[in-house]
Length: 323
Length: 254
Image (cartoon, rainbow over all chains, first blue to last red; front, side, top):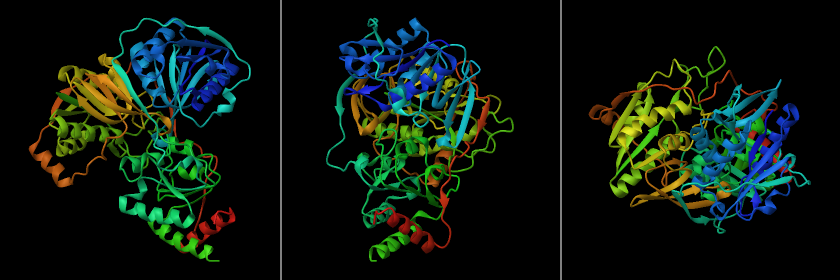
């Protein structure tokens, strides 16, 4: 097997967990099929970021034009590295940065791309992809082609700790290739407002999803949260409607939560949501669809209407509290 | 100024997603198809920009007449023109690379200043339409966008990063933007307005070719095996609610 490249995603001096998961996947392939794992690190003042990446080699490109992510320079540098080194595989995290880059590079370099990838399996010297599509309801498999394949890996199968090492690998500096002036300019990074609560630190969370149906019903969920002494959070459809602030978003562009109790109301359990709640100590799911993937991760569940069960649950909790 | 919005239908995840007899793809006839939710947001963002700046909005779909309802819904919301590329998805396993090439041909004819499309589709296993399309067109791309303003020949956009962080970016037009959420929720249009649009409006039909060279081949499709399932609580509403309250109490949480 030729080399397996992993794109190192980082923000404000911290390597993203998804990068370590990608390295863990790359190491698993290397163990089965051979080949070196190479981390590709782009940025500016990035020397300290390479210290715990579990790779045989780290290729770094350091330049002030790469200080923050914008598509044009990053895609240009990666395209040159891929053309130059021709790895068997290049793995990106399935994030808002990784999917921009992998999609663009696939079209620019005419390379196949697997997105929503759960796992690359090494079988008898060949590589097969497993993509988790349709919100986790369907798996799709196929063989990877005999050229450089690009992959955006979803979290779930691999643990970040398995992509870390205490041995600093060989670091090779790669010269910044010439590229055209970027058509995209970063104007400002906007951090989440500190005014709202940090759901990643809450012990009791009531998550609401599309099944809540309309804004009026959010107040019932809030009443339930109050009865339980918890807070509300939500999946993307609810945030998109503006019914809760973006600081309460759980999932790909939002936060990862690990409460003692997560009560999921009308949440189907798409992979990007499940990956962000799987460290919850206890998940109880309410969804009228008995096939909803949320029941695969929940400890208890009911297929009753969430409004009916919420009203009844408020009464039951008040009764229990009242002794 | 002109905006083109390519849209596509995806399987309705609320309904059963039926796999074909060969177990290597969807059963296209048995699946309930709906507009990709991110494309719905792209249409809404386009209409918002039309209301702000008076841009022309052209919505493009590919496939058969199944997509007409989504097209006329966009018209009822305010889209100026509708285009359907007639390609037969029933004979070929269409992927996003092939779909992006179909849209590329139409967009090159239309010569828009801005292309808005949904940032992803849940059944797309080979990348996002927008990222692919931008490279085929030689335009810049930014995905995961939750706000767009046009200023001269630039767009000011908000890109979502993980953890609720956003980046404000300026991109020179023409450009392709992958929309994850419009700045306001997609508006509701009553079915009567959609029917009215169907009566009074028209869809411009074009021919297209399916080029499968860039995509991957799926040879096995299946529902995942479930390692664990929730214990489904039974009984009356009161029984279930009491049981949940007991469970929460047993965890020492109330």
